[in-house]
Length: 265
Image 1 (cartoon, rainbow, N blue to C red):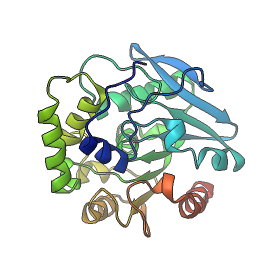
Image 2: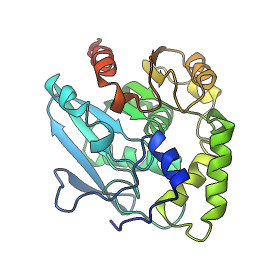
Image 3: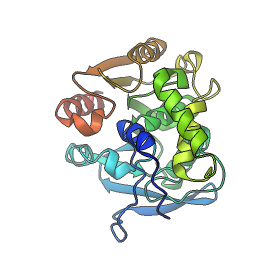
Image 4: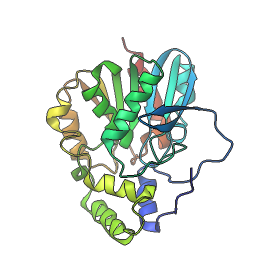
């Protein structure tokens, strides 16, 4: 994977606040595997044994990094972990054209089919949570339970000042539209669309959902509550004294709740 040009300080702060890295992965440190999905290569970590848990990272991050504080705990609890890197992120190379939640969701479904995994419990952070909800709507047979944190179902879930800052960065960097940072900006400014996610679509999710957010999350709390109310079978866990990075910054609070939710019959 080519090293991307680092974004400006403002965008970098926004990306880091959302758990995104956009940093190169160390060459030679590849404990995972590769699969071909929808015409391109996709990197994924697969470790442990037992009931499978799919981990979906936030924008610009990687599966191994985003859930570094959960992977060992899940394996110790008797789970098999599958943690893919989405296109253009982590170790997975980019492809021409914009990023879309729909395409990343289809890549994720294709990976599960490639691995011959019939169904999983799903844990998604930020963009990964969006993908998880979309997967549960369009491929309900693949998803048993969901744990999602820091998700929005439209750009309006982000504070207006963040949207304005992203737009300013997008305008300033229009000369490099194929870089991952530029693609992520465009994704966050314009998606999820109503065709991706909506209250009506959320209402079709029958699987149990644990919806998490930090009490100082990047996603507006009222938006998170709207998502919770739209889900027919959901629990809400607002992590105290916490920003967007619930899995990374609060494993002492998050992991017992996560493992307890996955252990329920």
